[in-house]
Length: 180
Image (cartoon, rainbow, N blue to C red; front, side, top):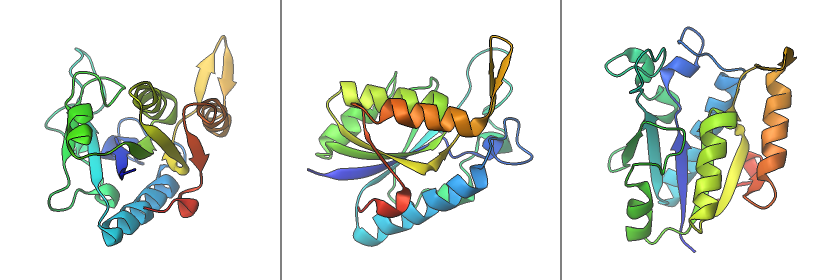
């Protein structure tokens, strides 16, 4: 199996001062950065995903703003492709699947943001396409949500989505336990 690191939407708007700050994004970004460094040192493939908003009235990841730029913690290196997406799934209306298959990749380590949207959707899509997936739980971030008048804390959102992905969609592990 050939494994690649897939870094999803680690963009400025998700950090403090951005248009959609997430809980624990700084901690997740440190784990993303450590994973990225290990993959680079091993000479393993790395793919970056950048969301650019195209819906009218979008409030974050607006093209041509600082907020849509990839954060320095996950900045692409020379030769590392950036796949631009406009939907939660990194596979929808992109050439990501084609790029991965052309490179012989059949196993993905997925990290980034937001856990309950783009990480969840991308992981499930990858599983449906036949990729063996691992999600780096502590290299992902989310935010508080509200449902039916009830506030759901980000930590609970994170736990619920990691639990849901862990069977059968992905192995869910701390970043430090993932080898390139």
